[in-house]
Image 1: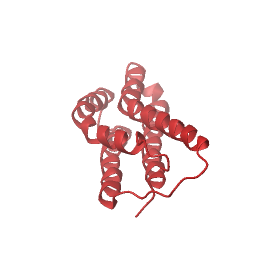
Image 2: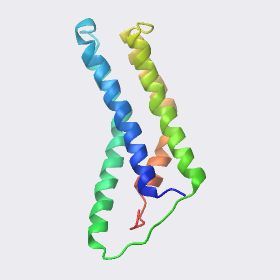
Image 3: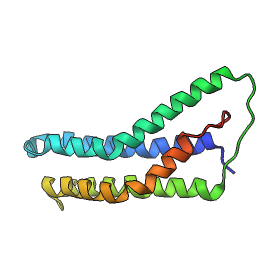
Length: 143
């Protein structure tokens, strides 16, 4: 079994890399999309920001709790839940990365990319909300 802290690190890495990639694409194409640049950045932040903010906040809160402890025991988590969390993160973040890649390849216009971010985010947010709360909101002092 994997340690919860390892799973958290993997999840944050998936989300951060995806977020940074999706921010970099509009920055790179800024001259080509002046009318849609701000909206594309906003959609990227709206898509990844709330979950990343929660993850980072819980990491700092957990770090402060651990600093107050003298001893901690190693806590393992359910393998199925660990794998599911990583798969759901890859699906969610990967979809938006793919949309951005298709924009880079000029398969989608800026307007279509913005529209897909808006539409898919509202329908897929449920996939990751529980995972973020479970892995990053844990009250266990050892995770």
